[in-house]
Image 1: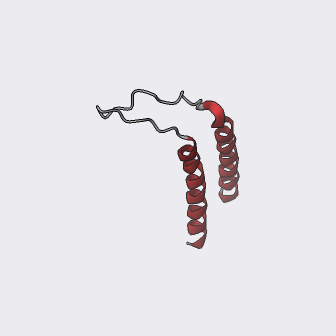
Image 2: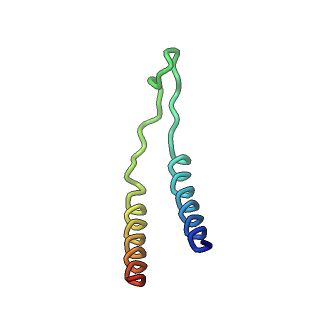
Image 3: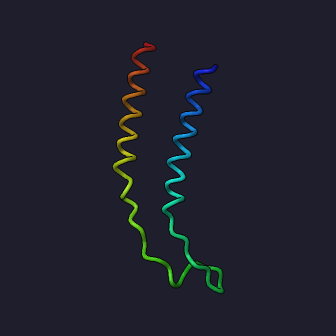
Length: 73
């Protein structure tokens, strides 16, 4: 039970760090009188800056999962 709780804690911390990164780099828009976000918005930010980090995290997770499956089998 303690190992499961520890793994869940690690997953939650990783998710928080990953999702807080998106929140810190987002660009809010300005509301107009109509309630839409059109008008003097900042230029669009590129979204491909963190893809390499996400790919590396996926590869590390896959290797970790395969090693754990071999140990239990």
